[in-house]
Length: 278
Image (tube, rainbow, N blue to C red; front, top):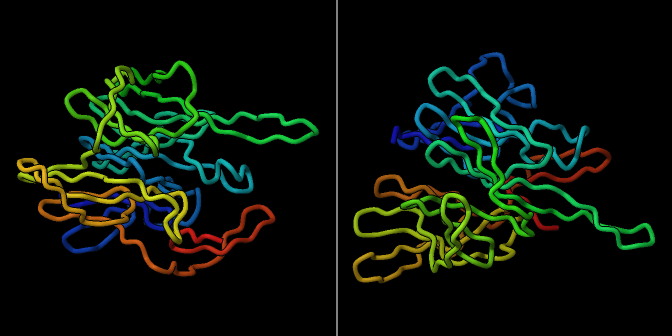
């Protein structure tokens, strides 16, 4: 609405002017290098980042790889920034990892990931992830678990419409009420509508080349009068933004560009602008 997008660039939260194609860090400190966890806007996860009123809500990592290699790549803070003065507020910091953030009305929905060790005998075992659907009330500042038992799969929340939440778990598209009840199967998940058209994520792309840990979908335009559907893009990362009569999206490169090395404890890995398959 104000010609700006708020996205992560090199781990830092930036404001991008879509008309001039310029980006500036949101951190208000002129002396900050924006290069480590001392910067309050370092370690931002942009999936589900949402502006609502004078605030922008996002997930943030606050743990370095030396402290905890697992939490160093998983968001474990729910935060919001006041766009009027640049102040940062930490709303919730659980023991587990937060993912798939979405702000709806006066609430913030997210997945809360916990890990469980399964023993296989002989001193062997593996760590498995389980997920709860949670809701943070911005008025009461309390968190409510909407699932009684943990789920085995991460649930991706896309949007709310007419009191229904629309989800995907890689295999099924479905909707629920605002309390994660009354599940109904759905055929498509709409992103937005412009005039007589709506845009939908159409088909999850499994194992796209040169990409890991990123949701890739086909993207389709549907005529809401005739039902005619035209595939616009075969593989596009989430999220896609509808801006006026334009779509703003991230383009997948055929070959990732080498940008340096990453150090995690004793391991050294090459870093690319996309995650490369080895």
